[in-house]
Length: 245
Ligand SMILES: [Zn+2]
Image (cartoon, rainbow, N blue to C red; front, side, top):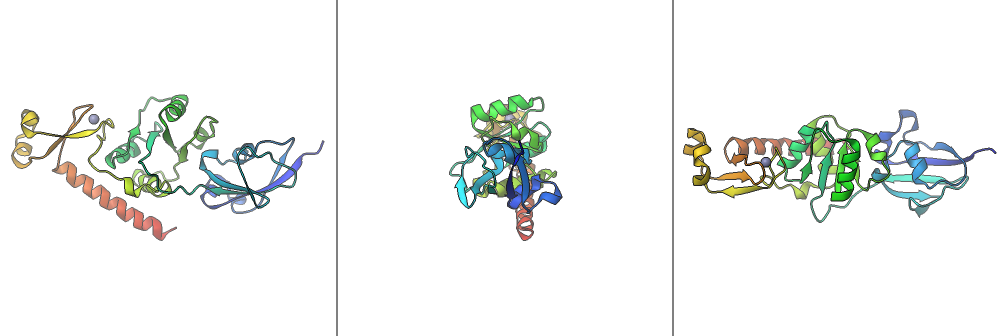
């Protein structure tokens, strides 16, 4: 029996997943039977978690739609509205610097360098965490509800990219989380920790914070300055990013 044909076209940033000769053009797809439309989308290289609206022959279709001979399929990226609450993340093992960035910005970010792919998927599902990864294959796992494939390989640009693509700029909360362990930071009375401070720190600073989980101490000296510099850099990157969209 001869295979059926359908035509797929991917829009916007979904083309990042395609080889150059398949970007922004109609792609001929051959198939047998009537596969659910999620299968050809992923077979062509696009993780389902990145997909927003799908139109088949100009009619909106869900992932349950079964492909028919001659279908013209338009696949659009998702454009999330800014979420009401800050999302939580689980970050792939090789993205430790990004994880620190996200914690610095106040996002609940689970990261360990010893997690297996399967554990990342399970944590994502059980704790409703968005998977952030540079490994697109991870996002093809069928259990995944929410994941994002990071395009950039620079940690600061990765942070900007995520804030932008997931519409999170309004959820930045500096000095909320420990960059080392993701624990919540609390204000702590100076006298409680005075014995742990270097003499100059004790002399010049009065406002201190401590991680409720690992006990790391933060104060509005060098930490604060560094954080502000990073936030400035991020805002600069944001402007730059928008100029090139
Ligand atoms: Zn900590």
